Image 1 (spheres, helix red, strand yellow):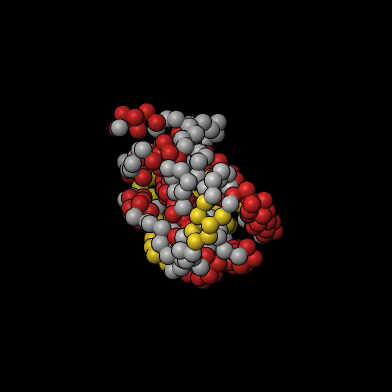
Image 2: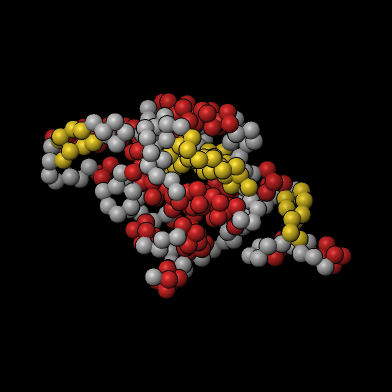
Length: 303
């Protein structure tokens, strides 16, 4: 297994079911990020501004272009120049761990996909020395890690992500408002959720985050069947949060179901666009490259 995982580190377009066989979240994050970056034609180190702020000690893997050579000549010590863009940008990963995120029609559940995505983004943030924090919630906050960029913080974040499990019901819009009040410093908010809540309430919560001066990125995670409803036989649908069951004939309700889902997605997209929020719809069966590309593109704009 170690050899297989190692061979996968340089591969792009890793699908979630392949990632599930790697095991370690840290290895998964490295596989996704480094495999993705290896396919880019530009430097992954983006977001550095021109306003010098302070120094920090050099760490293995840092870009040597940002070494302060004059300080090295005077002190014989390696220091990296930190710029205003580094010190002012905090990244907060918000993970929905409510019961509905436990759904899966194939190998990888929505929450598992969210864990892979959040771990990859955390790895990327720490690699670029951006302070990264984490808030996970169902109908209440279940985990909170304040943002830091120091050595060892990645392992803390990944440890918290790894122990997440699909919990109780959801009060997503209420949690967004609560998070907006909780965060005292502006930054980048990355929400990873299936967004199962009233669309207008969700947009209101996202607007609150934007009103606080944050840049907001939303990754909506869906299972393929939630988008396609491609069942061939009678099925029993169960609300994962209320455990209420409904026996249905797919052919009878498919058209109405798809209409309702598409209406929900359209309202979310339009609300995000009105508020200048980046929105990406992701399937648990597809590679994570598109999610990372959206994030990097956003960071490039901020830079």
